[in-house]
Length: 82
Image 1 (cartoon, rainbow, N blue to C red):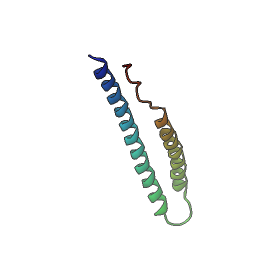
Image 2 (spheres, rainbow, N blue to C red):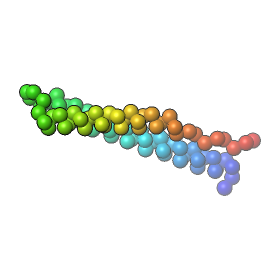
Image 3 (cartoon, helix red, strand yellow):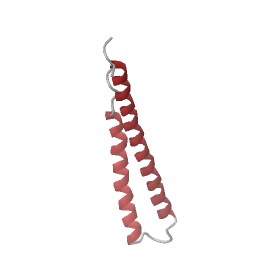
Image 4 (cartoon, rainbow, N blue to C red):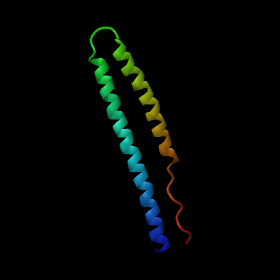
């Protein structure tokens, strides 16, 4: 392989890593929205099941924040020297 094709392969790997991370974040947001809707549709005072859902949502929010922050650590490869 040439330096350019090696670099292109590294760039594509970086893009794939970003795509996977963004897909995971999208999935987490969708799941969190489902939990919020479930809580909003729960009648009456907060039940034990509602509290469990609320606690799970908080954990999920923390995970989502960490996932979003981790996007910043994905760095593109350094181009080859000319």
